[in-house]
Length: 195
Image 1 (cartoon, helix red, strand yellow):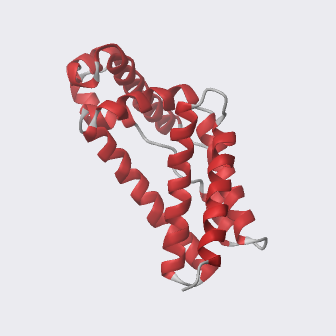
Image 2 (cartoon, one colour):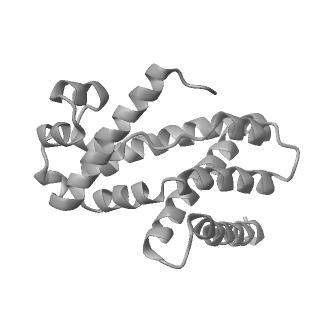
């Protein structure tokens, strides 16, 4: 999809504001930064800041990459094994995240010290769970099963990012592989348990 010049500029400005927020937050802590500080560092007015973000916590989080429409369509219409198609879907999303690793590390630093920012990110994650539930429902035809799969998938991404942040020897993709293996083992244990 080709973006208009206006939309590209809008995304660039949003990104500039996010980067200014993260840079200042790393230096001073997010609590020690004002929206006026952020606007000045980003080279925009305070009014422009508020046209993009409602507060500094939202600016620090930015717009996390959503699941791509083409990846959701491939998962919804997939003909391979469900596990294989879900893993491919997650791998593709991790590739998107890996393209911006330094920003994710900075966001992680802010999240560890700011509860409001964590709440904003959780809102994005909940929306992704709902969207993925709808996608998987077309495939598995049971809403509760789709919701469980969607929650497990989003949680796998969250856990993979956490593992990646705490293990210097793992890429995001490798961290997802570790988490995925744990999910498969857990699923086997649940399937083998008597009801």
